[in-house]
Image (cartoon, rainbow, N blue to C red; front, side, top):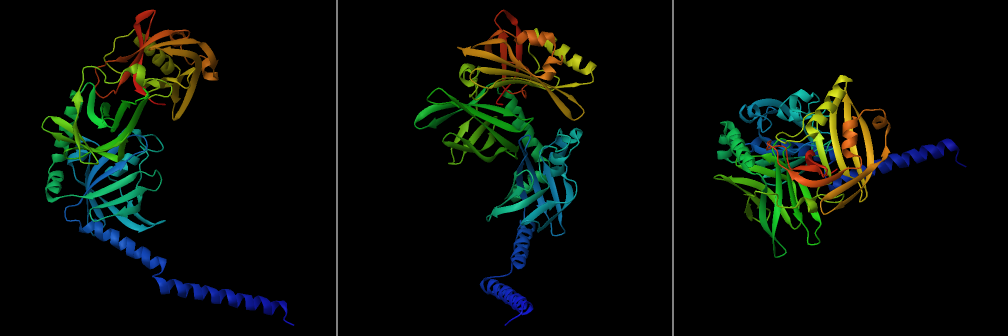
Amino acid sequence: MMNLKNILFGAMLLVVASSCQKQEEDLVFGESPDVRMKAKIDSINNALTTAPNGWKATVGTGLKGGYGFYMDFDDQQVVKMVADLTDASATKIEGSNYRVKQDNGATLIFDTYNYISMLNDPNPSVYNGTIREGLRSDLEYRFLRSNADSIIFVGKRYSQQLVLAKATAAEKEAYNTGAYKTGIDKTKIIFQSFKNPYIEVNIGGVATKLALSIFSGTKTLDIGSVLPDNKTVLNTFKFAFNLKGFDILAGGNHRDLVFTKGEVEGNSIFIHDIAGNKYEIKNSANPILPIEVMFSFDGAFNAITIAGTKQPEGVSSSFNSIWTALVNFHAANGMLTHSVNFRLSTSKVAVLDVRFQSGSTVYLASAEYNYTLTDGVLKLTAPIATNGNWNNGWVSTAVRNYFSGGEFKLTYISGSDPNAGTLGGLIKVSDPAAIFYGKLSKL
């Protein structure tokens, strides 16, 4: 009769034999995982370094829009680039180190500081990012897929795509001789000439106007339209500047259409779709879509937002002095006014959020109201709920009185800042000179 020691020894021999047999079977049907990974890394390195004219690139961020680059990789693990972040970055070629290594898949890593690093910089003074996360952009990108003309990576932390497309000889020359800034400037000038831009398309056999909002500061593009049931749809896309206009990142899907880019022709810009059609951006004296259709708790917009300490410029309103007093009150108490959002949270409840900041900590004072919204007229009750910071006096009496029990006419507002976005306002029915206004948003 076998003793326990012999049984255990025999079991160990079976495990070892099974393991060896499994390894032999793996090698029969293909290379080992390490060999395959090395081949993948070598293939990526070869593709990066042998593109004769370098690569056009776009990358998205988590907090703002997209950014454009030109990159030229060499076999000494140095990449030279220009980018559309600033005037200097669009013209000054900078080099940094890179490498491709095994790190949960083949991964492209930017080792030393470069223009992509600016998007990741936690110092807000570098490129207006947040203290901890910059603009939520990555420095390490995992390989996703490739074809003969492009390579696509995805950020390991924030999952934003880095898309590389082979440049032509003419494009390489343009990027290396300062033409990138020239193209960006021309595109921005045309953007600024639009008051209420739109394009005309055909959706299901119906001629339809799509309203556009183009934000050079945040590098985002809004496209909105009215559905057959009179509800609205609004999509926000990230874009990056290129030599001739801009690329729309990650598929610009709006209803049945997919938009890919905007291209300057003379003094006009045309939006292109994936089917090869192009649509000229036109200008309207008035907003294309009525605010009564666009603004509701489940509409394209449901909020009016003032971000930071400054209101949008060029609007005359008695509310301006109320706003200035609130900002000064916060400052006198060691706080910085962060934002004010008025939003319709449900079909019956509206919320006023006042945020103020000390260091990196943001505090919230909040009140809720019942409301009705009929034919563009908004009626609020007195607050039905408030939080501690509201009750502790962090919102001025003038702001409280402005909203409590108020009746307002909902309207578009015209300001003087072309980069402020689409502005909306609440005009007090009892005092038409009193207008609360800010950027229309979806919260």
